[in-house]
Amino acid sequence: MKSGIKQDKITKSEQTRSKIEYRFLNMIPSKQWDKISVKELCEKCKITRGTFYLYFNDIYDLMEQIETRLLEDISERLSAIAPCEARGSVPCILEAGFDCTAPPALFAWFEFCRDHKTAIFALLDPKFGDPYFVKRLKVILEESLNVMMDQDGMPRDELRTHFLKLMLEMHFLSARTWLASPEGDFLSVDDIIHLLNAIRIGANYQHYKYDTEQINPRQISRDAKT
Image (cartoon, rainbow, N blue to C red; front, side, top):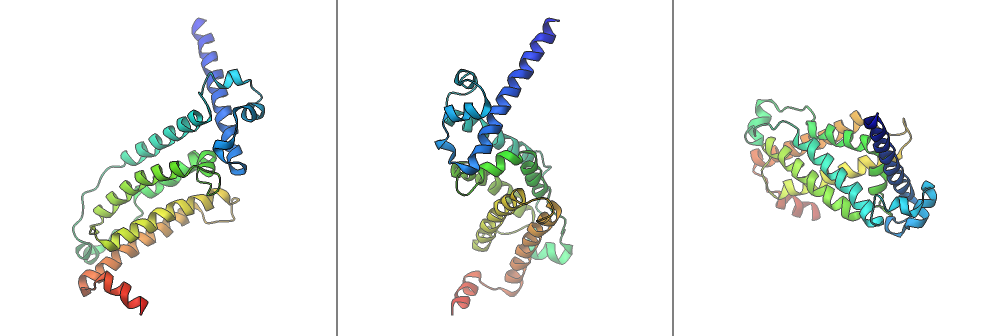
């Protein structure tokens, strides 16, 4: 009997915490997150300020707890992906038959966004979201993309740096657009993943051309300006 009562209390406590976080995240698209006061958040949640302080020290602590949990989750998802050994240089890979299958990391990213839809939609908001969270998330995604590019045999050169930046921005842009769009008004997750994977394949093919034709990416850039 005692264990049953204890379990009920734990469940109610977690429900209260979740309600506070949910209401807070839903307020962000209409107001800068660090301008939201504890008072107005408590009014939205229909709880006392004392109840809020049972779980969080202030709004900053609330945000930090949410973000830490999210960053730990995406890190765990990406780390759980079984590593593949690098398959040699890009020319060798393409000539042997390049694997055009979308890497698991792309699926992991959108599964993460789907599972935390409310939080990701709010925190990636370009106006009222948290740019510091975006910066920390980019570090994690950049590491994952570098692993993917290493496995593809892509050399760590200037061209790769540009593709890396493009892929990072496409991750965030596609996620924001997908989460903000009513169902059916935008591409499906599979379509978005295929699009990102097409960029990956194109990047490797571009390196293949540079390697086989001995084209200098810097020369291409200069020629485009003339």
